[in-house]
Image (cartoon, rainbow, N blue to C red; front, side, top):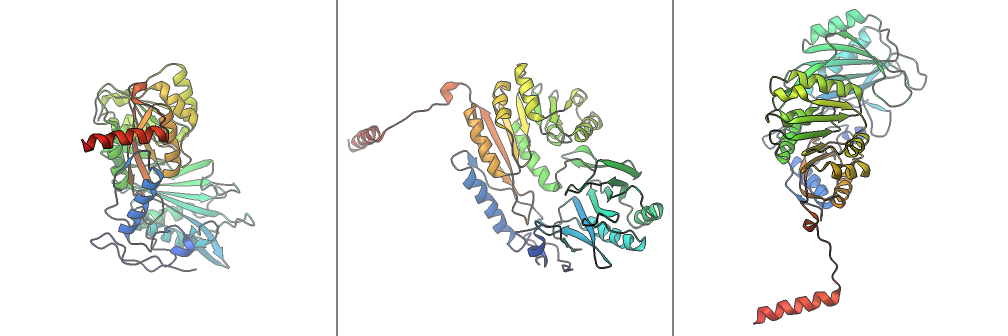
Length: 430
């Protein structure tokens, strides 16, 4: 299989000095051959075009260093003949592309994965074959706490029985002391899901920690956690500035994951009453733990609520009870939110809504829907969360119109237009 040469890091301009030799076959970094400044222009233009006529679009927030930023890395394992191979799937396929020097992946994580591949050969661990459904090792997932340096290793197997397990883990820990927990996940599914339903902790606590804007977070294998630490801090800082939270205000963090945005936003404001809503039970449990971990930073965290529920369902129930919130954060998946969520939001009557979007197309659609329900999109700021790829994150502030008179609709036919225009021109001549 093709292997990429180890590229240099970045120059003073943040430009990659070499391109990835497998980028065309891998597809993981579609913009790898484009100078970074041009990547930013393309992404900013995309957001400007999609939000044209909806709100102001401010300049994009680029990355100081666009390389090796992924704190979550996973490789698929397979074989070519008798040779064990590991790497990313090629775009739109299950063909494994080997690349020990990916431009996106954290270098330490990539080295650990390379060593795990060698250990699999040494311990005679067979890779899984999707066609025959034979073999054991399907994938390996790594997560890294950017500020703590803690690394989690998840071995995704087709069976809980790992030959030579103790020796395998012992050698791995000796080579990489930064590995703080090792888990085995059993995945017997026939679809493309990375993790199965059962996870067993073999070493450590089963989770790692990281910090965002001084707030500490517990991260489990299934947790949603942004993959670019430094750009996440930029994104959250923009969201917090837009929210302009005040003491005593009620904050709703919808699609809250492990509670990152809501906890970061309310950490420095005393008395904020935080409610987070998240469908994933595991993530919701982590969010509760994260509030407890940080209660010393803000006593109000002891009163924070995290509810495991579909966000639209929660909004409908809350609006039926005539509940009110001062500020709403929403960070939905790529598909965006629902019309029902937006309609219910009008009844909850938050003064400010901060929408964090990972797809500007669905953001544009949802902003138009919010306009129908009395909210004005004020501005949007693109953030380059995923350098070298075509993806872009956007932070948008919406504010509630104070009354119906703030939102005036009118019609003007062409005869009236020219009559008014002629009258204005006559005034200027005088």
